[in-house]
Structures are given as C-alpha cells and as structure tokens.
Amino acid sequence: MTFEFLIFYQNAFSSSIRETLVNVLTRVLVENYDEFDSDEVQQMVILRSERLGKEATDEAENTVQNVLLCFALELPEETNEAQTVVKEFAEALVDTDPISHVFKFEDPLLQADLAHWAEEIFTLEMKLRRVLTLIYLYAYQDGDPYNLLRDESTEPMGKKDLKSEDVKKALENEFFYLTFSQYRGLNKRPEIKQVTVLLETISSSETYDAFRAELNRVPVEHEEDAVFLAGLKERMDSIEKMRNCVAHNRRPSQAVINNYNTARPPLNQLLDNYLNQWLWRESVEGESLQGNED
Image (cartoon, helix red, strand yellow):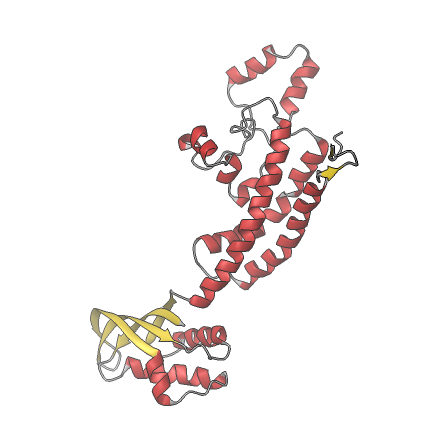
C-alpha cells in the first residue's frame, strides 16, 4: 500500500529529514504493535522529489532553507490497523521539528472507502431518479417527458447547453442533471417577477378564484406525491455532503460519515415504500394488477 505525502520543512543542513521520517514511523508502528526490523522500516520511506525554497537565518544565526519534499510511505499488506498507522504518522509529523506542514494525497484505503460510498450513492440516486420520473411523468402525461421541470424553480445544471435530443439518446431526463441539494427544492414554482407573465395569467383565468388557484398551484398536485417530495428535504443535505467528498476524492469528516449513515437508510426505505405502491402483480387470468390510483 503506497501513500503519497508532501511536507514543508526548514532544512538546517545538519539534520536528515529521511532519518526524521523513519524515526516517527518506527515509533508509530511500535505503538500499533507492528513488528518490523529497522531495515524494513527504512525501505518504507521513499523520497520522491524535492523543491528548494528561500534561505533564511533562524534565531540562533543558523542558515536554514525552506524545502518542499514529496515522499511515499510504503506499508506492507500485513500492517496492523494500516489506516490508524497512516493517521497517527501524519499527525505526529505535524508536531515534529523541522516540519511545518503535511499534506496527504494518494491513499488506497481512502480510495477503497470512497468506492464503497460511491456504489451506495449510485444505487440510492438512481432509485431516487426512478421515483421522481414516476411522479413527474404522471403529473405531466401530456407534456414533453424531457421538460419535466418546466414549472419548477429548480433548474438542471447547464440548462442552457442541455439539449433534449442528447438527453433522449442517453436514455436520461432532467433529473440526471440535478445535485442532491437541488432535490430539496422540487415542487416549488418560481416567483412571478415579470409583469407580462402576471398579465398572461390574469387574462387566461376566467374568475378570480381560478387566478388564485393558478398562482398557488404547485407542479405536482397529487397529494401523496407532493407529500413524498416534501419528505425529501430533511434527508438531502447529509447525502450531498458525502457525495461531494466522493466526487472530489477527499476524506469525509466523522460527522459527515455519521450523518450520512443516519440519513441513507430512511431515505432508501422511503423510496422503497413509494415503489412498493405500484408493484406489478399477475391476476389469475394473467391480467396485470397494479396499485390503485386515487
């Protein structure tokens, strides 16, 4: 397992940074009950590249130089609690002179965790898109199936460049171009800001009550569907924060992990419950029986 680091330190020309790295690693391995001889530990630290910075004089009148050093930590597969070792090694480096800053990049353990979360989020979001398509296609049965958000304040990403023929060819719809945070805003019409739009609404309404009804109309009026959409709001933020970490290859905080683990199961259950309303059943005569619609 190879972990890539970059450190920023001041080289006093009298100390060995490699020796410093090896000493810190040795201590961390011992604390985690990993038994490797000194030669093995030496081989785990691989210096990659170095960029020299400014020279300066410290308080003791010693000449020092800023150094940016890239190195790899090569841990054997049999390392006990490898993730803990890497974490404690990095934390120890931050508190070790002459090192000022530590950054970790390639991390196979993080990559494996992100792949697991990505698989979960893929399954969850595809199911969510499936449910939303059922809802909006039912609400707009006579409309354009590739313009299901036409009455929504929420707009798909890159709407100006989104061509229905490309979306159709990919067997997708507008829900494939929303973020998790945007799902929270569904079933909300935009405010009428243009006088011409307001006048058109007035002229097309035969009565005042009809005018008020049109102003208050939501894109999805079916009661159960509207309740489902409202129920999405409280669960999206936690999923979105984890998705962002997965999308940008960064380690989520423990709070993000905990909130995601709390939010995902009930959201998944909410989706299953909705889909279970419309389970396909076969009658004795072979005719299909589906969930009853109000």
